[in-house]
Image (cartoon, rainbow, N blue to C red):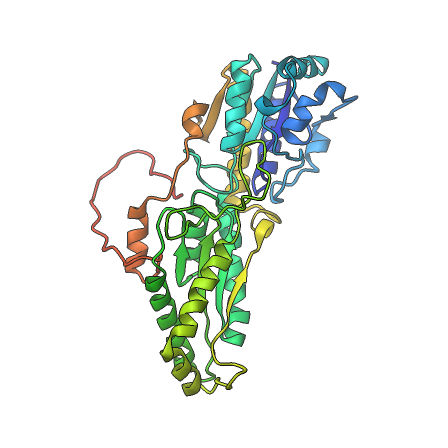
Amino acid sequence: MKNIGIITSGGDCGGLNGVIKGAALTALNKGMTAYIIPNGYAGLYNLVDFSELTKLTKERVEQIHVFMAGSEAGNSRVKVSKIKDDNKYERIKEGLKKFNLDALVISGGDDTGSVVKDLAEKGIPCIHAPKTMDLDLMPYSVGGDSTINRIQEEIRDLRTTGRTHNRMIVLEVFGRYAGHTAFRGGVAADADAVLIPEIPVDFDVLYKHVKEAFIKRVEESDVRAGTATIVVAEGLRDASGNELVDMNSQPDSFGHRKLMGAGSYVVKQIESRVKADPEIKEFMKRTGQFVEGVYEIPEVREIRPGHLVRCGFSSSVDANFGMEAGAAAVELISKDIFGVTVVSYRGGTVQYMDVKDAIVQRFVDPKDVEMFEGLGISFGRTPVKASPKTEKVTGVPVRVY
């Protein structure tokens, strides 16, 4: 193996530049040369038409900063098997042959991993470096910690406007089917409630919890100021367990339609209860806020930071893990191991697993939520009392996330 191509695919997030840098520098240390294949699988498919690729020399690698989120290689959401070209795999192989690329390091999530598995089965040597801000792959993946930190920062900052205007704040964040980042980011931000796809929401229970916290803060403040915060994962399901999907949107190549309205749905549920609650009017009068016909109830505001949770800067965890994953991928290539997912590179050992096992979706375990319910955070249900077991372990501790 002399030349490798580096691809990042799917959504952007923190840690991807770490993967690129770790892979490129390890390749240089082994006498290999790494090249960027730009724009994800779209670039891989069109590689045969390129006139040149960016060679990752030591000088060029110095321009890639691991503390920056996003990807120097660029991403796209393209599923190779869905490309309407019967000759697509041969076209990809011709592109690799044109640039004498012996193997690929591909960083992405479960959708990307499914393509890695597909390419490997077609005889294209590749390694999967796990990436997803959703934290829903079996191994830890770059992007998760950076996103959790961003969510925490946003809730922290939104308290200033919430408290200034005595508003309830609902923050809707990415996560689709899994609530890991909403869960951990919300907990880290001292949110009053965290709503995730794994736990059906009883809005009467949620409203009672949030209302009590909000009223208590305002009434105990010497300037009558307070707020309440709710973090909502975009994949929240309605009372019937249905996903809130925009059926008018076109599905992407992986079959995903745009999610819609989790935050606004929660706002409407809370607002309807605020308007029907006689205690709210009395509260507004007691705290000197009530103005007939003008300001009779507190506001409930939705904020959707969208891509702000996946951009900007990488956390230290993701910068480190990204470099480890990139380096580990090249180590596996040097040992002629392909079609697998990097798990870790610690203690002088590269751990890996089959891609098909790595891309199995991992969800929040409701048992993990119980402890935090006991500490006063609402997950939109009647709290379940935690009754943990104990177990002595040896060796390396389990991961944090």
